[in-house]
Length: 483
Image 1 (tube, rainbow, N blue to C red):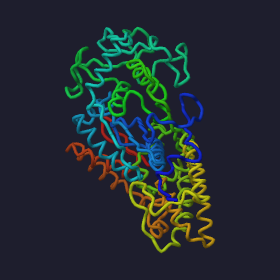
Image 2: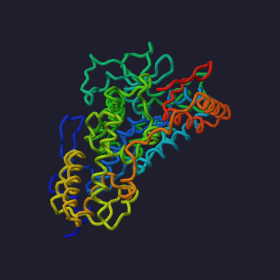
Image 3: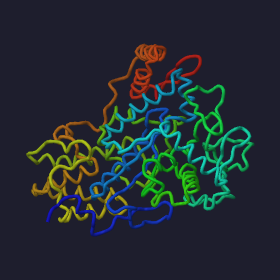
Image 4: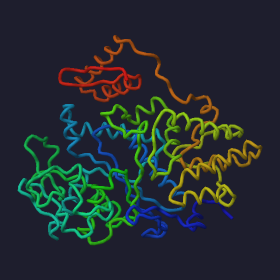
């Protein structure tokens, strides 16, 4: 019997997914046999990705990889929001065009995600490329009496006219408050109504405005994903996912828009990752515990960060701390120590591709498959890897390809063993900078900003933060403090 991944299409135990909509695990039955459409809400690219993004997108990278390993043809879509109030404001503060800001941020995001071992999505639509589709959907909603143009010129969705609003988040209309991103507007018919099309302001740059039947303006955040998802995957998608903060209002509003426009179910399965805290507190710039992926990669091996994410179930909240990263490094050392006993020291390779033939019929293959088919239970899958390592260390070196291959499915064990075993758990900053050295770097950053070399400006800021120096910009200039 062949051990090819395609044979997993008919697994002994059917894949089960926890559906946020039904609030229970359900057997996964795709719309089309052997094919899966997966849409995950991506970044609003006003700044580089942070660790919370890494927590969500590594999790969905593993999910997409397991679906492919199980034999499904996967269309993985992760959108980019490249027009938004925050983007317009950030570009204005930096004195640069919106496209320059978003292009630079997308480039950084792509590099950071690749460093964490993520396979690029099959489709990465940008909101600005789908304005006609958004206008078409808004027109459908208006025609059905679900949208109206308010006195201020914005086009809003009439929440109370959509039956079933709140079914994803479990919130009732009477208890709801306007979503965090919905500005207070006295011209709304109901405070809960959310914007579909934002009327342009004279002070906003021309590149943030498009013509529409309702006047010049730009799309609201929620309509962007509804339109892009439909354009790439169709009116109904198998799986729609994202971070924990998107359940309400973003995903709730997507359901209202898409189902209101087309009268069919928008997504059969909704998946949401758990939150990421830093040292037991919610990550926040105001608390000083906010870390970008780039800053984390400057101190920790990328595979250690990935292991830290994978060792927790994707739905659970996780706590990021240096102790947790050191533990993750130690755990990976155990696995690499077992792999070092092989004559083949080559890494698994890019793209989470397992090397060699996996044996799905042995005890370890069966247990790994059972774990991943149980709502992508990566902690149980990792337990299989450690049991394999134990047997290998007892002398059963024939299991080394199985350990290497199963680890590759999770995006782990990608290094040459001897090189990883020589690495340190934490890359310590190379000594304290003197005050004069700090001032020199701040001056270089100021010159870079004045020369519109924002990539260099960001690099200096991130380097200083890695060295324990926090910068604080104000109209009077830049001050600093040691963290």
